[in-house]
Length: 135
Length: 286
Image 1 (cartoon, rainbow over the protein chains, first blue to last red):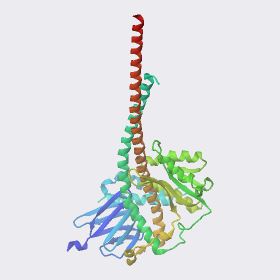
Image 2 (cartoon, helix red, strand yellow):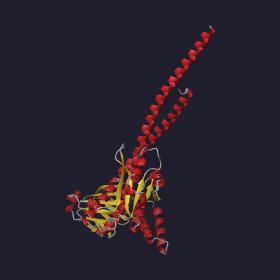
Image 3 (tube, chains in turn red, blue):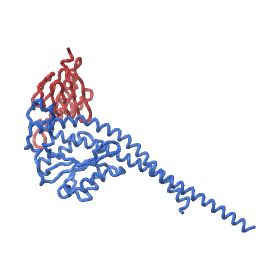
Image 4 (cartoon, chains in turn purple, green):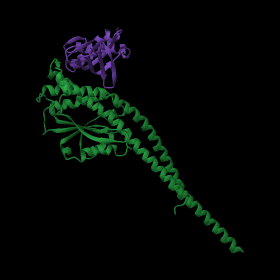
């Protein structure tokens, strides 16, 4: 019975095949908001924003940080193409924290000479990392 | 005939060169294995991005996207991927020839983005304009390097400074066969993409919209192409160096054996000569 709820999930980054396995449910952060996907979802291609991907396997829940990419959802298969993907134990929490503070400061200062879009992206990335590493 | 000392000296020098080429061959064999592994592990990502992009393009058929428009009158940008070091046979010069022997890429309407010092030096001495150089990248290409190169290029493309983007690099087919290739990155021609029958049956939804997805995917597609080309070029470079050094080593061995033959002949003839002299001397006394 249990097997019928499972679908194939692949997370691919340029350097490696990050994850490949069977999952029953996966949570993703897309540009339109956070979504959760079960099997037999309507086919969809969506843009990802830096955030946490939560993989619900049959008996286990795994988390990963994904920065910038997109997801292709088919009925029984989901493919995540991520430019950067990291497991919690690959994340340097202190560094992410520092980056977060730095980005927040830059956003507060504002004014010319500060690339707001870049600072915001940096903030999002560091938040995604921190969310992933703090289980 | 050359003297024994000269031949001996020559032989020693060839021997030490042979040792160096043999060591270089071993080093590039190891590097090749590594580079090949990297090139292979970058393939799934590239194929995934390509498939998705092709599907969007084939479905939307929107030819007015800014990355799909042709600008034949503007300058062409070429990313030239070569190596930082020589002694790799024709590896570097074959890539350079892609530009110099093609009238489409006359130096007046081409700007270069070079990766690898050898190609940069050869082309800039021929009068090509080098706009940016990323030679340090080739020692150990990272995906973020490919991203920064494609960012730079897309910025110039959108600003209208360049009308077309090409990639000149060496395709790694297998250990002995590497093909210098010129590939067009932008504008993308929509006609190339067609849906497979299976894909036609699936009604795909795009969030936020086809246009936005395309906006996001094309830069990623370009970066992944550049990254793929970088890792493949590293594999080709080491493959080419391995082949070149292998033939250099066997040439050295051949030279050593013919020099040893010469040396032995010279030695023999000098002994014969000495003997004749001694006998002649002894006869004269008697």
